[in-house]
Image (cartoon, rainbow, N blue to C red):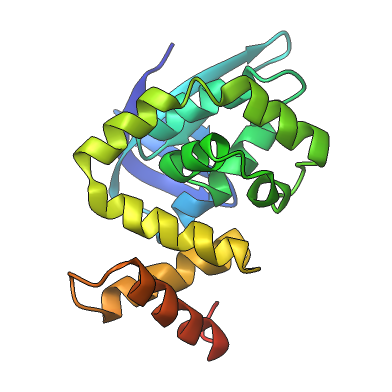
Length: 200
């Protein structure tokens, strides 16, 4: 198995990055969320990878964190879910948010992801809930600020935002507000941004 690749970006398109490692171009399918960060041709990049082997195909899936890779591996172990659906989930929910969504049994958030129906959402929660506990514990201990951001996103999704809209306005609100701004202030600022129609 290839655990990671580090090299120069040769191509970045929809769900696919080609990374040149010592003259060899490796193609890796990645979450769209990664590409939205503005990965550019010619820049240095490290991908945490998972190699998926089928009878007729070998595919590489790449992530910008080891946590995302571990969540991907958990998701594809759920009965009836393959790599494409797992990648779709991680395109919307980074590892920590996905873990909290599952831990909170928040099927409404999962249902907003393309390709996820009610039965699939319930199956994901049932089969993964216990597995994500260690990931959540590590994340909360290492970066409590992330918990505030994730809670703000979850609250906005609960108020009717799509996951993409919620993540966008929370990031923008965090940039505008003082570093010590609390959860309620971030949510309030996020709603103002949303109401002003400044979501791309």
